[in-house]
Amino acid sequence: MSDPRAQTHPAPSGVANASELAERPRVVVVGAGIAGLAAATGLAERGVAVDLIERQSYLGGRVGGWTERLSDDSEVAMNRGFHAFFRQYYNLRNLLRRIDPALAMLTPVDDYPLIDAEGRTDTFRGLPLTPPLNAMMFALRSPTFRLRDLVRLDARAAAPLAAVSVPDIYDRLDHLDADSFLRDINFPVAARHLAFEVFSRSFFAEPTDLSAAELAAMFHIYFLGSREGLIFDVADANFDAALWNPLGAYLESLGVRVHRETSVSEVRHGQGWMVGLDGGAKLDADGVVLATDIAGLQRIVENSAGIGDDDWRKSVAKLGKAPPFIVHRLWLDKKVNSDRAPFIGTGGRPPLDNVSVLERYEREAADWSRKHGGSVVELHSYAVKTPDDTLRDRLLGRLHELYPETRSAQVVAEKVLWHNDCPRFAPGDFADRPVVRSPDDGLVLAGDGIRIDLPVALMERAATTGWSAANQLLDRFGIRGHSLQTVPNYGRMALLSRVAERGGPRTG
Image (cartoon, rainbow, N blue to C red; front, side):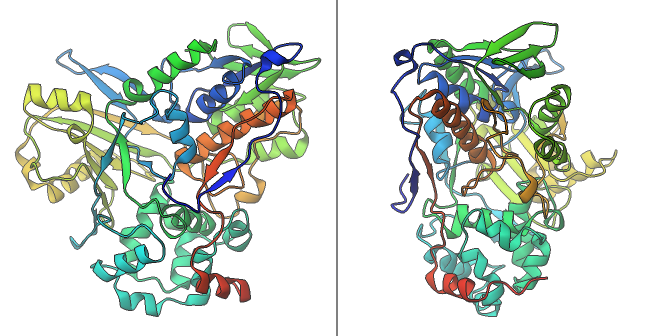
């Protein structure tokens, strides 16, 4: 955390550990993704007995890792695709520090070029860290966003970008889609295609389907409101080996009982809490954290008559899923050129959104590359509303455009993953989104689809809601919680902030 303006949100007060209470409370955490792991850690470190339930055989949820076999019967590491660990992911990084205070399992990516349909390339290497100097320098050297474009922006309409606070930005912009907002502020089309579409597709959505408030919050978190910069780190090995197996061992050392390949069927509330497992087993608890994906949460709530109230149950039922995405991993018999970046983003090259060269940073892929003399390449395609039989060939065609040396490479093996389980952040969704606290004392929610009124997104939102869920239960038990950190929850560009305060955006 290098930003002196980063904010600390104090922890609830209480006794230091559950051992100081007359009786040790027990909590069931449902879901062992980032949110559930953070919640389990926050509770177990304060002496609470924890059962952690995970339906998969691995931890980490959508950032999990596992092993698969190729056609030659060799074992390879597999996951659901590239994830960037930004420096402003304070709460996620604090979770990972439980297994290594130095975060040696994360390795920096010096740059990630963004290449548009015309071949123009923007980079973030060497930018100043402090806003607004970072934005000005980016504009000065960008081939797609020129300094003159800054002058042409509608300052009044663009003012919310420089005056972001949560939840106020949602009151201002959540009724509007990101594409309309960009048109309203007169943002240049070329740069919109390259830079802004990359951000919106981080939510697996087209700009027309993404809330303008969510886009503005993203720019605040990663660029205009933080001095941590846009350069990020990546895990140096598959996620199971680098992150979650060590964290699982840490939790077990604290007494957490981890139940893998176990599903929850229902939750009941009487004198205490009862969590029903598929197969008929039951767990009694003093509190429950539901940290599942959207479909899992909706299924559990639907099967759990009597929890929550009508409005809360409706808000859970209304949660939507983003369009599907594709991860296409290729094991090639030839290496890509040595000067290739580990990761590039694309704009205007559908259906391709980014390319990763895994042996540049992942240990298992590097081992395979040395052994076989080839490369492990990953292609992402987001917001795939209508996958068809041509998608594979079109993705490969885009790879050959960007990396011509791959045209002559043979595909030794390939794996295609198709998933449709990420939360939706469409215009108008924010107000009805359920928050961490439920109407029932002792039942809390966590996950990247759960509302929390702090400037966080993606993996950091999952981690932050997990810590917050733990804090709310700890506070109920009378136990001290964990402080949280975020980027500043206010704009850092004074002139535009004053414009925003005077009039706000001219948007429909």
